Length: 441
Image (cartoon, rainbow, N blue to C red; front, side, top):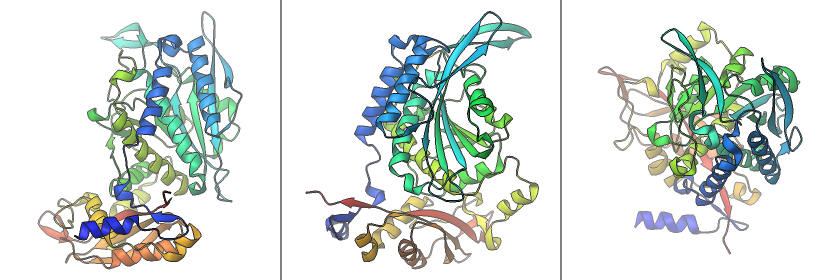
């Protein structure tokens, strides 16, 4: 009966044609989005583009396609429809390629002139030299899965960030970089020749090989402590997927150009390969449902990156020490040998579902004003399992913050976390979502 009552409550109008949309029950498998990604991949991986080799007509057609899709989403282009053309001198000739870049402005007066770059390589087929038993060999690369999946993800991410640009403090640049295989030429050109404000890029995200999450979802940061901290903090929040932080570089790619410019960068991938394999990115091999869940995570990550503290390129040891120590002597949730549990589960999603969203009351005034957003709440579970030191770290609005804090402060006791056999104070961070949707006619 309680579930039925909750279900009926969620269907009741809460004011002015709006109702509260419980994010726990939102459809993470959005068929329209999956279908759009499949259509993008079908074109970008089609035989008509002949592999999207760097400098080829196929790569140019892919650039035009990315530009047209950005324009259709009302995302401003930094360059023309063909992209930003550049030349790359080689021994035998000059390779001509192009970058496509779109721009979403941030809202914060102080941070809107700082940037987060999200990039995916545009080209597919390329050549490079590999060392096999001390002998140099020329090898043709297809670029792991051709990265049509990364480009499709970039497009969908652009649309979602554009729709929710009011949440972005920093501006976001979406870059489809040309001539990336094998030397990262397009990204180098963007950072060193084309984009005049490269010094104001606070962080970057690379999307590479994101179509087969059943084999794993990985994040590579070159061991940047601040980016690892953000990734780990997000692992303590409700997410449709969670990446595994890896120390080994999955493959050489555009992230290296950002490192060379001392810009913190994280590469997300679903392929762990020491070098690019030769399987092309065809619609039949990709997992579109899991791509959509990956997209949801990437959107949340980019929003956090655009609104949070600037990550240091090489954080000092003192900063790392503060991170390990935690707040008020508490052990970070993820570092407990036995994590604290709520209703028998150590998954924070269970706490959100069975307590937070079950007893959350959307503030009437917030409904009336159409206020929605996210509140990030940190709290400590002490040695007795009691919830203490509840505080809002980030908040979209004071009305939402007040309600999120009220519900979490009223939490029943947890089973405390342990280090070895010793009960410890542990700290956890959660995002509480407040969403309104129009009442269906």
